[in-house]
Length: 352
Ligand SMILES: NC(=O)c1ccc[n+]([C@@H]2O[C@H](COP(=O)([O-])OP(=O)(O)OC[C@H]3O[C@@H](n4cnc5c(N)ncnc54)[C@H](O)[C@@H]3O)[C@@H](O)[C@H]2O)c1
Ligand SMILES: [Zn+2]
Image (cartoon, rainbow, N blue to C red):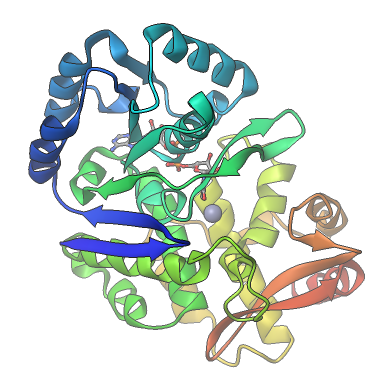
């Protein structure tokens, strides 16, 4: 199965396929000028063993985690790649989760002012979210993803089978983003997510629907003015989620997807409080819990730390002039609503 979509005159090409097809395809096109970047967690997978043999000393094996998205690491790796020898027609092939993808994309966008990047995302989060939309980047000492570029991979190749080796907690984190899509754009994803008995059989369909949902918001790089189609809608669950992650210093006690799960619940409660969301939250909370994501928010948000969380939000990129572009949900899905921090604090104090 292949999904193709054109973005901004450049082709945003996303293939949904399987490892066998990927293998056939890769061995046909790789050249001895190319570079391979892989996540260490994948090296025991047969294809990766085979392909790193082919790339030999043009292979970089990295431990996929947030620490690799640093300026120091970027400098170290880019110098290594330049030393290996590259030309404008060299390509970077990356296999890994979102951290490997973001770093490899930024390397590709800056090497010789841009070489081709073939991205093979291997975590669920990377398949449904970070590989789509062309954002690349690394972290600054002052915040996440502050150094980066918009640079579309030449191709994104998705093989859902890679998820077989992904730790359960990481799978759950990927589902937090899928659940987000199903709420901001209600449709076919909803039906599949509520029927969890054979969810794994539906993985390809879930990934495909998630990609289509994300693409509908990022189909060009300009910020759309419409409150429903703005890229900002993808931030649903993230205003509160990022503040929670930030106040836990981005440590692994709460992972991104877990913070987003809490963010989704609190932000739905806010939509309910404002009269937009008129249904009970119980089915969504139950579904989130069934995916192995946290739903008890009392550990992360309480009347005592609301002020601290609001202060963290003030540093979010979605903030302007004392307002936060908040994402509310009604029966049609997500839309942007500017809320002042003062109002947000008052609402949170009432609903928590
Ligand atoms: N560019 C974007 O638009 C965008 C969007 C969302 C998130 N992101 C970024 O994505 C990153 C998070 O991505 P992530 O959750 O994939 O994190 P990650 O890259 O740290 O991967 C999570 C863990 O899963 C392991 N892993 C990956 N694939 C595996 C597999 N198939 N089998 C076994 N283990 C595997 C990794 O080694 C790592 O330990 C963050 O840095 C975030 O900023 C970027
Ligand atoms: Zn996210």
